[in-house]
Image (tube, rainbow, N blue to C red; front, side):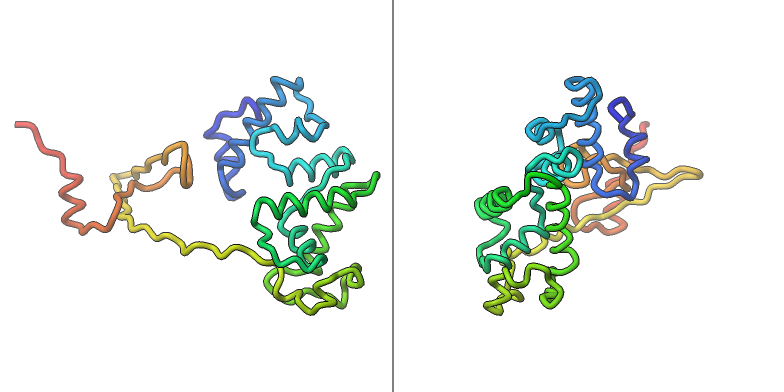
Length: 220
């Protein structure tokens, strides 16, 4: 992975999600080769320092693979925590996330930490459901749930309202000649970084405007 050419890596990654993820995987592999002699580090701070790895991924890897007592707080766990504590604060707020993570940290067992973290994730994924009615009648921690007791579970968790999606108008060009079609590569940074696409022009253009833009003056 550390030595794989980027174009080959992108081809292998097709259909697996954002290409920025596989680029970070390659960067992380290079760091592991250079600093750790090709052995994945087994300490939380070292894993967290790898490119593309945040607190949740570092916590999941370290608790599941190395049984280290660190939390793995994803969206499922945040939802479970908000309902268990009947907490109506915005779970996307950085300070709230940090506080919930600290609460989970304080109740971690000393052993089988990965199983504990995965049980919280599964509780959120299968019982304490998002975008619908939680299955409170099947919940193993129902007696501990403050929102269930208060009847507020459907109103939780609270999230920040998403801004309206920005729309952009583009004119896409399909430039062909026998056996060939032109494509261009997007910049290495920003939206859909480094992906290949048909040439585009900002805004909407008529066929006549495109023809004029593409015309190449002939030399006398």
